[in-house]
Image (cartoon, rainbow, N blue to C red; front, side, top):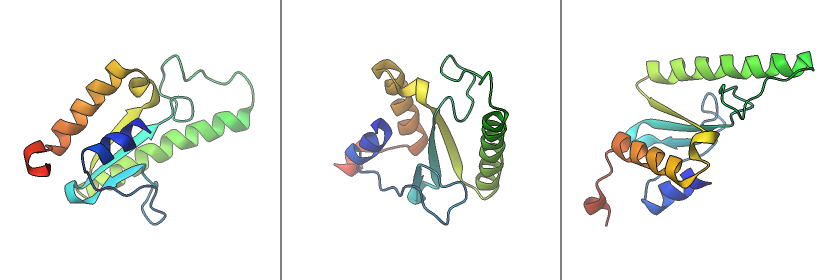
Length: 118
């Protein structure tokens, strides 16, 4: 929700979860040819404290590995077509300090010109 609010507050036109867009990215900014994915640390196996490996349930473990593989395939697919892919991790945007760093990264990547947008 933080990323969506940031994009809206900065008048950035985006689309979300497009059904015909491989991987159904969280945010697609066509004007800048940029994709932003906000990945849950557990489901996308980030490796941080929030992504503990399941101790049981081999089918869940297989599903998590498949998710990581699909993430990599989708990233390669989009980048090979000239898209800039920004993967954000849930743990990195939880607190305000972390989100401030992320918002600066988005600003720099999109090269937002605040004067032109006001």
